[in-house]
Amino acid sequence: MNFSSTEIEGLWVWVANIAAVMALFQAVRYAEWKKLLADTQFQHLFLGATVFVTLLWQLKADITPLVSLHFLMSMTLTVMFRWPFALMASVLALIGLTWTGKAPVELLGG
Image (cartoon, rainbow, N blue to C red):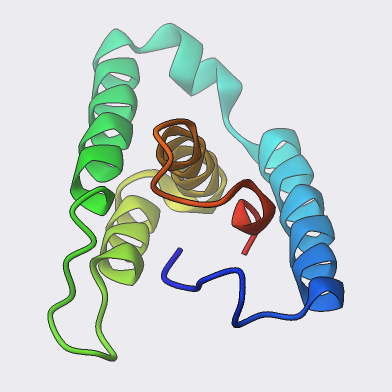
């Protein structure tokens, strides 16, 4: 998210992307889909938080050089939705950043 593609060597980009796909597969597998499909309030909260995180990450604002809004918002999503839905929301936000050109495609899993 905060990395540029020139700072990371090609092999590590592929390792991070493979690890991200494996983690996303586990998140889809362990997610509580019945809760998401049955509760419309949870659906609205999940999609609204995903859009909010996407828009906030577009700002590229940092509190300090070590504390980034990316990590704080990822932690907030984890507390709100548990890790499977937080990971999926983060991936959707990163896809939105990649789609708008704010993040390079090769760093989608990084």
